[in-house]
Length: 101
Image (cartoon, rainbow, N blue to C red; front, side, top):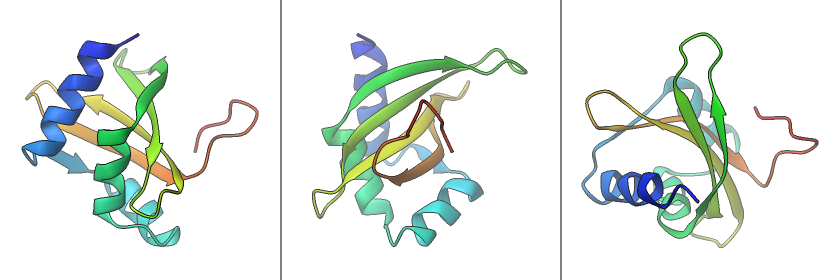
């Protein structure tokens, strides 16, 4: 499911056509992760959920993959109107009880 979106996200990562939000950058640092962990998670991961922002109506996608050290990472991403991938947040492991950071 959402294979087209996942392929577009991976293409954006490969071409360095993505933006890491300030929040995502702070989360990477707090969890001891690098942008390379994030890239690997998108390239190795799969979309496990789609969510709609109730304010903007935009879709965001939850990708679960592996960082460079093979630890589980979860990233919330969306495709911008300009075609770039926007990394909203990223964190180690999986969300619990359906809660997203």
